Length: 108
Length: 177
Image 1 (spheres, each protein chain N blue to C red):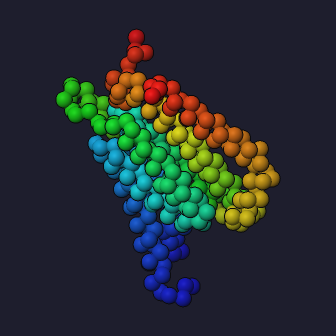
Image 2 (tube, each protein chain N blue to C red):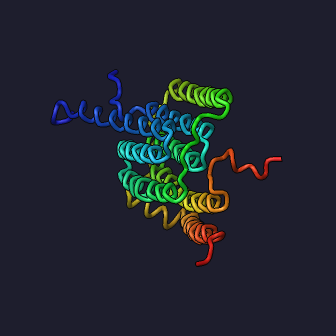
């Protein structure tokens, strides 16, 4: 049995998606500004989308379902970015900083 | 059998290029100190992801990925970077706890990556499935307007609320001229 060509092997997509999730969580824990954490969150969204698309291509009976799901993820990510960036700009207006260390007013 | 003998190899090379673009973009997005470079890394990562979507038989989503992420999300983040000047703080304050926290994050993410790698590589994912549709753009459109019309309308409502909310939130606190 000849090995499958690279683009037809599902495990490669799963490993890339796992890498994106891991690097997104790493960035989310390590970043110290709000915008940096937002970018890491986008990486996690991308990992979820890639994983869904890979399962959709190789395992799903109806290949339209996963594509629609990923389209909804993209729409919600766009909405989330709009809200989060407006909140970040409002925070910057009030505190003149978006570093997470300085936004500690609720810290007991 | 492909008509051109090296075509399989060229396709494999382009696939590896897409994976490398995705991985390098994600690394740039997570590891650089300046936020503006991080945004550029996110854009590079999304271009690689669009290539991967193309290899997953979905050129429509590849187009949407570039349109929404590179064209809208990254540009919006660049606007926020211009408005808020979010430079990472210099590493003067207690280096020890910073290093400890970085090591903690590294351990957590490496554990997640290793576990998912094992899970993904151990299984045999090659079992064939029976298809009920071809997954073309026409099939997506039909499903969006029949089976998923409720979710479609709800997501348009969510986008509308998000836009109005973003305008309202960004407006407060602004000094009147």
